[in-house]
Image 1 (cartoon, rainbow over the protein chains, first blue to last red):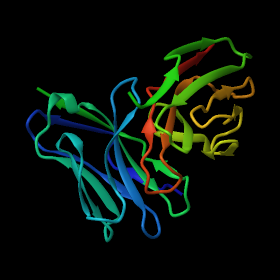
Image 2 (image 1 turned 90 degrees about the vertical axis):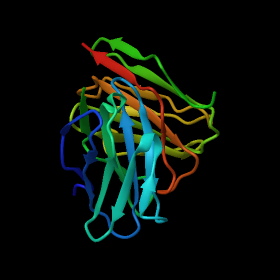
Image 3 (image 1 turned 45 degrees about the vertical axis):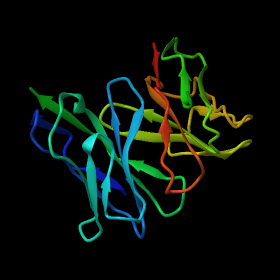
Image 4 (image 1 turned 30 degrees about the vertical axis):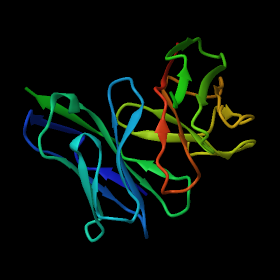
Length: 113
Length: 114
């Protein structure tokens, strides 16, 4: 069963406009959730994580995400896109029994000048 | 600088040859992982290791092998039994096993087999 669904494979925004990357997960009880960013031919960099503390999580580079248990969502947002935000973003959920980190299929963010 | 190194960045091999991808970390992390990335498929777990001299198969272990003889090293061998080895391979580590601990990733190795 799919544990993480990234609802958009591609998102295109203009520089200076808000960014919304959507992620839904399926997991029983107390998941940990992460967002990573990957620039072309590079490794993944952690943007932010949720591990059952505050539901609104702030990350690096102005990104934040809100854990909504009732909607099983963990959408990534940023108030104002920058050209350097163009990259691929991955939502990741960790299940209750360890060592299973499930990656979404990724969302490619394009930022237009 | 602390981090994870993978070498080489690009690797080319002929079909039928085994090839070993290097992964080294100086973060003093206990857990290490190997993932395979294909376009449009996210990352898939090949093998992971929670501690030295121990490792477990992930979701797509067939045709791969690993070793964990030292805490800082977790090499991956792609054998000739792997039917479609061309991919981008990522190594990661985390401070400890457990769902709360984020993974740190290396820069990746792009393997091309012809």
